[in-house]
Amino acid sequence: MADLHLKHTKEDNSQKSSSDVVDYIDSHQLLGKTGRVHIRHRGEVYQLRQTQAGKLILTK
Image 1: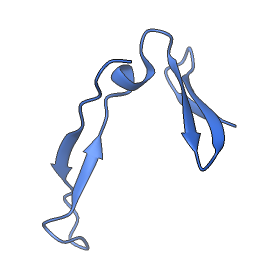
Image 2: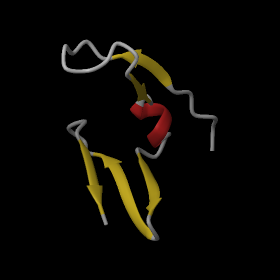
Image 3: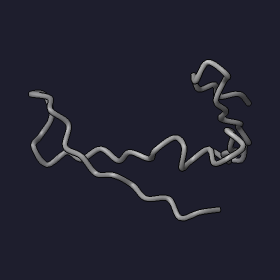
Image 4: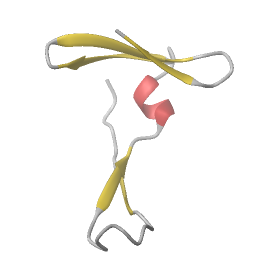
């Protein structure tokens, strides 16, 4: 799998501290050429995939 590069940005929200940072991963980088990726979370495996319409679906 290719190296994932996180983008760090500050959220523009008055309720959050100015030091709050949100990490972003480009979906194309995460899903790769196949348009899908399997994610292991707390011992369960989920599939994240992109539909033909460009939406994301997460299934167990």
